[in-house]
Length: 232
Ligand SMILES: Nc1nc2c(ncn2[C@@H]2O[C@H](COP(=O)(O)OP(=O)(O)O)[C@@H](O)[C@H]2O)c(=O)[nH]1
Ligand SMILES: [Mg+2]
View 1 (cartoon, rainbow, N blue to C red):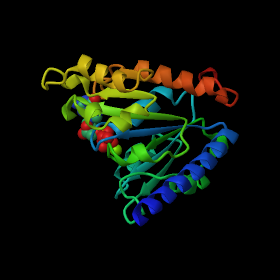
View 2: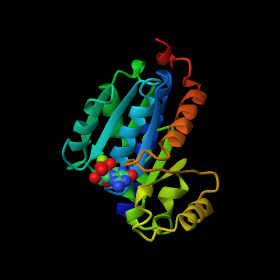
View 3: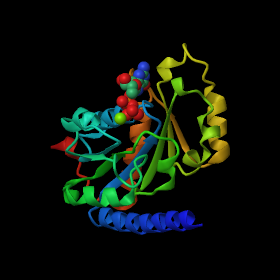
View 4: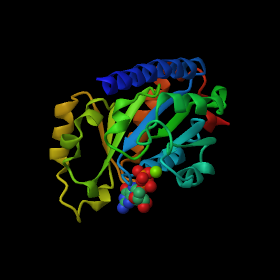
């Protein structure tokens, strides 16, 4: 019983910190996206492709979550406006980012200048679904080599997602991944979810994903801050 009480307390505390994070982000008109997937599905690759496509339109910062290392932060360092690495080893939950970790990171970002904050969560299909961070959108990436049963096996992650990216479609000739069956499984859990088929290797589908994301950023009353930087 005691263990259940403690867990509930952690969850409640997380939700109130997440609400504070979102208020702070809203105050500065910064739109935050929580990107979740298993290790190797392509979170960092999607972030890099997204920055390459949208950096002329948006000021983009990144928070990188990993159990250990700064490898991913180093990969995006030269592309993003600002990057913060969070290592979760020795934290209360090492398998996911939590709102308190984001609260600390936000103190170190120039929020007034940021339009879009991409948060790469720890590679895991279970824990990140339990902890909201204050994000405006939740994105799950599933990649072809992982197999097409992940939505069925890890339903919570997919039920709460605003969009699901099917990555590594360039693997289609080599793996038995039934894309229509996967789409049906995801839609069965979450009828309103947006689905995108992309390859970070070939660039296929990246335009569709980025134009949806840009519209989301602009229509969430963040447009006041976004300048048409291409016209400069
Ligand atoms: N063939 C192929 N490889 C990809 C694609 N996206 C990512 N990768 C590779 O998959 C590996 C893991 O990608 P990464 O973005 O680091 O995954 P993360 O652990 O989820 O951040 C890297 O070697 C990437 O180059 C893709 O669309 N096609
Ligand atoms: Mg990564």
